[in-house]
Length: 236
Image (cartoon, rainbow, N blue to C red; front, side, top):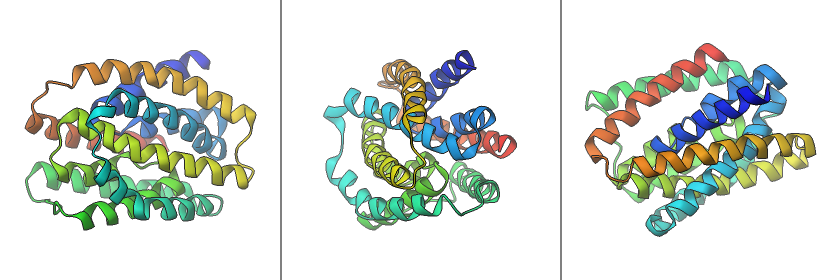
């Protein structure tokens, strides 16, 4: 079991380190298989907190702090709301609906028919939606990715900025889960174990994306959003 979790952690870390999301969507089905969904989301939260923190450190000099601040205005309170809803909302149908929405969004993006406005309101509203889904289902990367991609950032700046906002949301989630008695030392240690593997994947990915073409990179992100959404739909 631990060998599988380490390998999945490496893959998840590489994926999230290269395109900014997908780590949680890869991790959740596997951790759920071993532990059940009530444990999987808190474990994934700790693992993703470590992974995102490492990406923040690796790209610290390119973080767009003003945009991160805008994103977190609604992300923080809505993450709290979503985390409290985690205990009562049916996870499987909500996850499937979210994945369908992400696939439709990505297809429209690839066909050039989906253009979110590059405005402060996009970051603020995007933060609120991302925070709520993050707290509720443990998935946030594809939603925050859609908001941050409107900024037309270089790959490392995009990855590091998105990761910084994710760090704050995961900390908030972990605190709420603790208050709901959904977090204990066993969950915490398993999250750290998987998170360490993710950091290795992050390091490899961040080295590879520094010189990639921005237009090609956006296409890769959209294609991978479809792929990981299909993976999660099949796996839940």
